[in-house]
Amino acid sequence: MPRTLNKVIGEALFFLAVAFFVILAAFPFYWMLITAFKPNSDLYNVTNVPFWFNEWPTLDHVEYLFSQTLFARWLLNSLIIGVCVVAITLVTAIPAGYALARMKSRKGEALGIGIFLTYLVPPTLLFLPLSRIIADLGLQNSLWSLVLVYPTFTIPFCSWLLMGFFKALPVEIEEAAIVDGCSLFGAFIKMAIPLSVPAILTVVIFTFTLTLQEFVYALTFVSSSDQKPITLGVTTDLVRGDVFFWGELMAGALIAAVPVAIAYNLFLDRFISGITGGAVK
Amino acid sequence: MAVIAEPIAIKPVSRFRFILDRREVLETILVAPAILYVLLLVGLPLLLAIYYSLSAYTIYDPTWKFVGLTNFEQIVDNPTFIQTLTNTFIFTFGSQLLGLVLGKFGAFVLLRPFAGRKIVRALIILPFAVPVALATIAWRWLFDSLYSVINWTLIALGLMERADVPNWLGTPWLAMLCIVIINAWRFFPFAIVIFLAGITAVPQDIIDAATVDGAGFWRRNYQIIMPMILPIVAIGLIFGIVFTFTDLSIVFLLTNGGPVGATSVLGFAGFQTGIVSGDVSHGAAISLFMLPVLLVVVVLMLRFIRRREI
Image 1 (cartoon, one colour):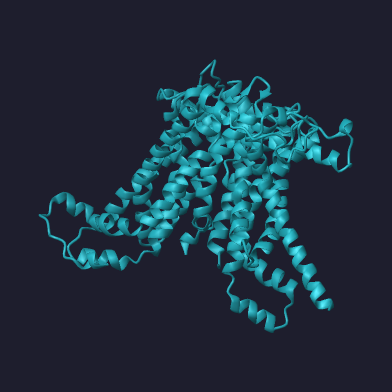
Image 2 (cartoon, one colour):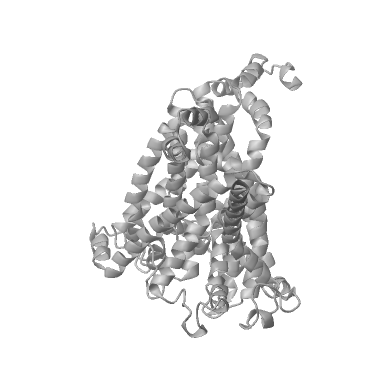
């Protein structure tokens, strides 16, 4: 009897711990969700229980975002930035990852680690000189400045990720193609790339989410509202003077956050193995 | 796989092809664009930042006059900067420690299979997945001076009166606590995943052998598993330290450095001085205080990458 009692208590404690972690992690997002659909009269009434709707939910805030703010434009800007940065990253990181993986001797690994370490050089160290470079190129206050700068962290990260993948790809496949008359470059284009579609897909998703998550460069280089990416637009343009429009803010943040959260969850394991360097093994 | 066996038509060979067929040449050409991009837009700006910090450059007076270490001396003499530096260390190590503790316990909970574990994991990973700027705005709303749901709960539970609820972002030490908590909250899912990746990679036979040899739960945990996953955890921690030490967004969006500079950190101070006030040389010098920490971290990282066993 005490044994089963112990077991019950153990189970209860376990699920209590699970609940603690879930609430800790997800409550701010629940709060976002509920704020986004609450009418203002409900939102700003301190006598109401805040955890649930006291009046009917409303789409007012979302409607306001799309009709009275540049929200749709910010979404479009983020999409443009994302697509361009993905293209630049793929064109540079796929060949680089492949070459690094196939290099004989330790040169490849050393070079790979070198590129990866640049991922650790922070935006807050580079934004001053970069803003000068961007001004010289005439890109200040334009979303194209971000297209130029974002590959500085996506290329190192993705080259590293792809290097790990190409290392795991048996080199015999390419050798067989070469024996059959394929050139070295042809073996890369016709054999290695088609076989690495899953890895390339991961890189596409990650590059895109990294561009959506970036804030520092966007804040530094872009100040015109119509050029802002979504994260910057929501967090800086929806605050007028000192007045926070919480309903609109939370609705905007929610819409911007949902796709990133989903993409991240799908590709999390690959991201972690990339970061912890499953690659060098 | 049938495709691979198909003979590929031999094309006339040009001189160009010969060069491309030399392995080292091709590899160099393939890797060059990535390296050039990074050198031009990371390496060059880094050198430029160092030069800025040694010059008298502002956006109003773009001279390149060399002034040696004067900027650094002026910065260090400023008591606000010492506060900023202290804040940065508290922010970084406080939040990483809290994140690690939460991560260790979280991993422990998630290790056991149970119904709905996938959904639980997806929910727990949210703070790390969602752009930090958006999450910070949500926290700002949670800590709102008037409509804070945290305060509402404290009052509803009878723990406090409406008159003396904490003003989270308006009291210096509470504001500091808030940014530490938010950053720990942002990184603990990452720590959980890192711990999980490490623990599941420990070969079961090693654990079994230890059990047979009489190692109990705690011994297995702290003398077998922990040392084995240490390199992976260290790499995760290094990422956490780098991204926290150089962070700007949480402080910028939550407190804007306030109240009266109480939560200013290096990244934020560099931004305020270099971009907002246009004093580029001092801004660059402030940011460069990150460099020693980054260098230490890079050296550690290289060592752990080499030493990794699992």
